[in-house]
Image (cartoon, rainbow, N blue to C red; front, side, top):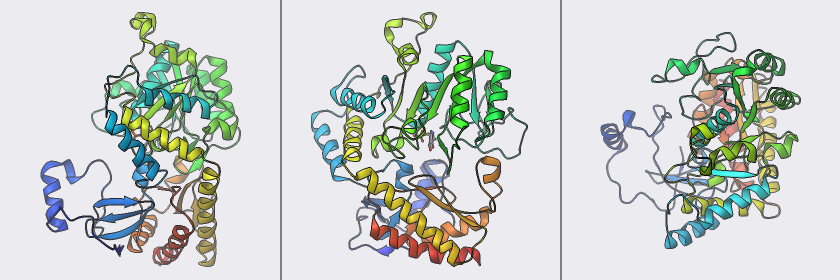
Length: 443
Ligand SMILES: Cc1ncc(COP(=O)(O)O)c(C=O)c1O
């Protein structure tokens, strides 16, 4: 598991792995920072990263596909991001959230790249920006309900954690919360529809439109993409019913295309939410879109009776994050960078296809739209949540554990992200590891 790195980056921490876990459990719920845990047998605390590779507490090197949950689109410690952060840190790490030059430059860059966007408001996480987008939609329409798609993750807010990972299939548009502590009353305001089923979504909207503020959709949900006709229908019914169409582009933004999902599909939403890749590893997100909706965040409006919608925080437009984001977008905009990034990801997926065929793994399929990838174990196409949960999760887990065993760090059970630092050598390394991991998983 992992190769010894030339020198350990972990020279200030002492104690065994078990002792470190015990220390963590004394101060962190479950000994972890969030929801993900490493399964028994995987002992890993990342301590440094360079490009596509990370070094852990034991000095072992791994090829990494967790990519900071998809934030590290340029890989770890990209020189352009490091330079931008260092230069900005010398000037100031934070200002009051009124105006600053890094944030202004970044907003201009976002509007240049995503042509239909007229206004941008920054936040720190994808969840926060989604929450703002939904609030803006409610402010703009004077309605309270939202439509979301089963299986979609839109962050950790009370509005978003419905129908994300339902344990039992309830009839649409009803839903259940994904977390304790979420007021049941909010469930009355969240309508859940099946992904890639335009008729089902249209019928929910047409029935309840008088109360619907927004339809929020991921252009690529988990690893399955919106099929032709799906976004078109959502756009059409939203237009017909005065509903705000929101793309959650926290995953796809500046990853699948620099111009966002509208560049790929030709269908423009009213608002988009960006995060993850935008900050290049620093916490930056944005809600962006049409002036008519975004103007509800203009403080000149006064109070709620004037339609003023509260969309800010102390760290909104943090200059350090904005400097990193600007460097990231500039790097991605350099000629050939996006093309090489996508080409390498497609080479990896083609290689995985070959392995699946060679191994005769008929129930295994390579999935992932654009620079996302995984192998799942299911027959038939996967185009929505209910098809995805029918896949063999035990075998999937064995495949992921096999990858880790071979020195490829993935989030067990999660999807893998590609970065611009994953090139030919990394693709070859991954294919060798995947061959062994697939063999073990099929046993
Ligand atoms: C599609 C999507 N939206 C929103 C979020 C929430 O982003 P964050 O974790 O930055 O709050 C995520 C996170 O994985 C996501 O995948």
